[in-house]
Image (cartoon, rainbow, N blue to C red):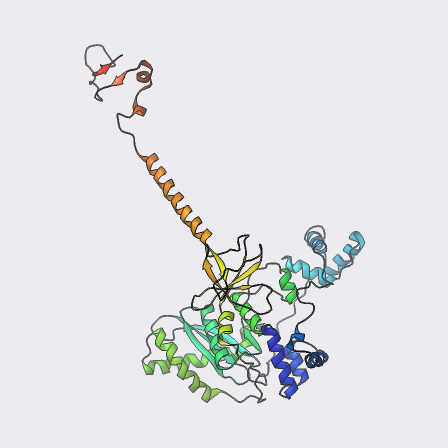
Length: 458
């Protein structure tokens, strides 16, 4: 079973025990209450493998063909440009015999980057949101750049706070707002509390890709709305719902936390004589407990929404940097300018199909692992340098050295007695130069060319 299916099993187990209602379980699993009962019946009839969906890796039957999408893009951005979406729907039906809704036309054109001049934008309205009822139902993450050490150097404090109780889950200082800081607070939250239900963040490029790339078939099958970043892939693997905040007011709980910490934490660190980044991160551990004891509140519902944390070895792979590669015909993959082969637990080289997708995983400690696509259970394989890649690397180095020697030889200046320096008339007449020195011009003898000394004509 995958991690998502394990998450489903844990939630359904809580529904059966009465710790969570069927409606809450359906909301957590993003499905109907009736389907929750249907899944419970399947588990009773068989084992947990019944949770796997039958339509996995299948393209939806109602998906628009690529030919239709291309026609809508070409006409909507060309011949029909400037028309409203409703008008385009009529034009496609009248001129092209294509029956497509205005909503689908607008969605296709928006993905292509076209703007709708007839769209209406409603004014912004802010409504105060109530706290979540359960601990772990929603956590907010953000970073605050500030002169925390009061030495003129800006540091970014990364943090995570629970929405229901206001509990500070983790804090971490870094020189800049970066993915390493967010990964650290996520790892500390997972190890101390478990897997939360959802995470609320801004739309920084660490969380959401700024590129307007088209979705792949895998993204469409998985129901993703945008390409995932490395951080987004980790949240998706853990089954954490990722909610983007469009305004700072939307995640006001953690924004207000920064105001509290900028006035309190700086004074506390000044009293303790904190001067370096390492000392500040060590001090945050005891300060977090002190802050929570004073400001945290009790949740409205005593049941926690945190799920159990994955095993340490699985968590190590989940939090690692992931990069997909295609296998060559020689069962090799290229990564960071080098070629590697997969080995199993016994040290035996694993044979791969040509074009097979392999995911390279690099945890925080720098060790390299690989995961094969299509396996029911994620089995980490080791990576060793390929012998063919090493030979190619050495060969390229030798070739580069020989080219350098040829360039140096070509740049040398021939000596004065080199055959290339002979005049054409000397080569033609068969003359040979015995001495390189020529007589100076003779003045007054009427010979404007001077005389040549030391030339023997054969």
